[in-house]
Structures are given as C-alpha cells and as structure tokens.
Length: 287
Image (tube, rainbow, N blue to C red; front, side, top):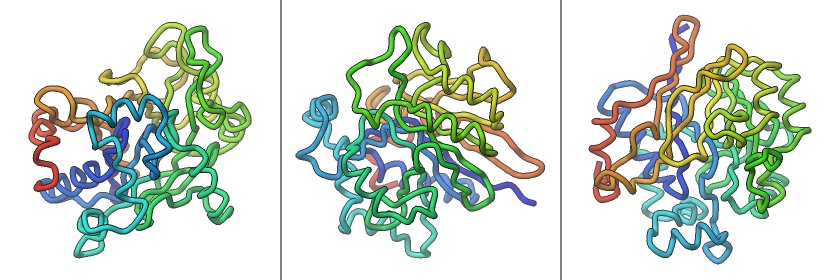
C-alpha cells in the first residue's frame, strides 16, 4: 500500500483559509496529493464575531486574521475560491478543540451531526470537521485519529478559568484508552512534557495504555520539536502556532509538519523553515 500524506498544523487562531492555501501550495510545488489536513486545537472557531472570548477579542482588535472562522461559516467568494477548488480536490481538515473556541456553537453543531460519525462539519463547505471528544475518526488513506478536547485543569500550574468543554475530561481519556488508533490529536501536552507542573496526566496515561504511533499537540506558543521524555513508545511532537506574526510575518518554523502513513512509511517531519518563510500574511492570498 502506498503511503498517505497529511499536513498537521499547530494553533491556527482563525487562520483557517491561510492553512488551506499553504496546503494547496505544498501540493502544487511538491507534486504530492494530500489525503487530509490535521490541526491540534485552538482553531479559533468563533463563527460569530460578537461571541469572541476575551483573549481572542484582544488579538482580533489588532489582527483580523483571528476572525477567519467567519469566512467558513457561510458561503462567500473568498472561501469559494479556496475550498471549492476547480478540480474539487481541496483536502478536508480535521481538528480537535482547544481552549479558545466557541463551545456553545460547537455543541450545537455536534448535536446536529449524525451520531454515527466520529466527526462533524463546522463550515458551509464540509471541508472543516471537528473530531468528537474521545472518539476515533478514520481518515482517507486509513489513518485512525483519536481526539481529546481542551486543556488540563488539574496540574499544579494549570489554567483554572477555562470553559467546561475546554477542559480535558476523564471519561474521554478512558474512552480512547479502550480504542485502537494511530495518532492522537490533543491541544495540551503530556504532564511535564513542555513545562514542569503543566500538561495532562491523562494524556500521559493514555499514550501508555493505547500506544498510538504518534501524538501531536500545540498550545505552548512558538515552541516545537519532538518530546522524548514521555513514557511509552509513542512518538510525541509539539507544533508551534501557525499565526504569521514573527520573523517578517511569515509562517513560523515548526508550525506545520508532514505525516506519511503506510505499510512502508510511518514518518513525521516538520516542513522546511526556509520554505515556510516564503508564505506570509502579506502574500498568502496570492500563493
């Protein structure tokens, strides 16, 4: 079986259409079709700009890219050009929920979706899908992806003021511990993986119990890299935020990576930083 290929993005905070444009550029330049896109939470899903949380409202006041979810919630010309590609080949993006999302609207969409599906659409194009908390979605190409919503609220240095649906739930951890899957998408890290006293013991336990081949998370800003000091055999990777704020407003190093999955190829590597630097908040619409 030939390998399937997926681009994985760090925190987007509304930069949803830029992520799709970068994926299309990568496919075009490298001549490889993507089987899907993955994202590790803080998609910035606020389709109603009157309902932003405080942090998102503060950033959006200076950066309209934070409001990108409004461009996928209803059909519009800009999204049409990106998500309705001429050949119909725009890949689907699957994401887990972080702590900066509109959980009320996510909950309404989740209840409105078929319970037989492990994910549900959050856009007008069925190109952006949220994997249900504690569920496993099988992607085109055969990759099985498990999702945990939210961040830890139990660690000594955990954030306490987080919406209830933005907190990691023990039943969701337990549900995944009984399932077979290949890659975990979480927003938070295993306990102490990035910062001492932060991260989730539940994620640490899950990686040992379920033993997925890969685990991916974001949440910690511009940091990125493989995390080696985690129990178990899972390869754990941190993704930097894809926000196009630093280094000349270009896509940040470590904010996107390529997962290849097949019988003979099960690898992950970050996209080349020099290639990412060519993709900026000033030129992304024209790439």
